[in-house]
Amino acid sequence: ILIRKRRSQQELLVIANNLADAFEADFLMLARLLPDIQVLCSQPNSTAVETGSCDQLNLQSICFILQRFMRVVSSKLHPVMLFLDDLQWCDMAALMLIESILSDAIGSSCVFFVGSYRSNEV
Image (cartoon, rainbow, N blue to C red):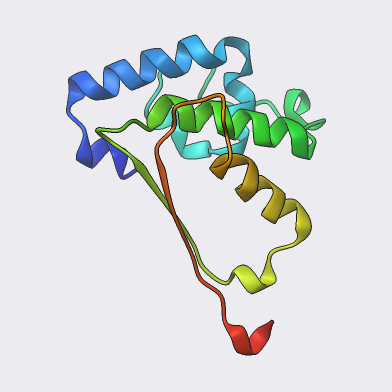
């Protein structure tokens, strides 16, 4: 995770605590979507992500979980850059997920989005 290289141990501890507070029992669902997040947080039982508890994730749940994650890890001081390539291959669900992250009015997330596509493949 790049965030480990860019932040101090104290900042990482604050982020880990904020993630623990924000997700509590839903941490396993977050870890299912973002497996590398376990490196940041030392949650109990976070080393083995249970598949049974996450099988019923729908698009709305995924959007909500990722919105919560972006609210925790992004700030005006440390914005998040999200770069997605080959957007010409996105389906409607992927576009809705991107839209939900970028239009999150509840959170104070600071996200810089860059998307690219090949116009000759659209």
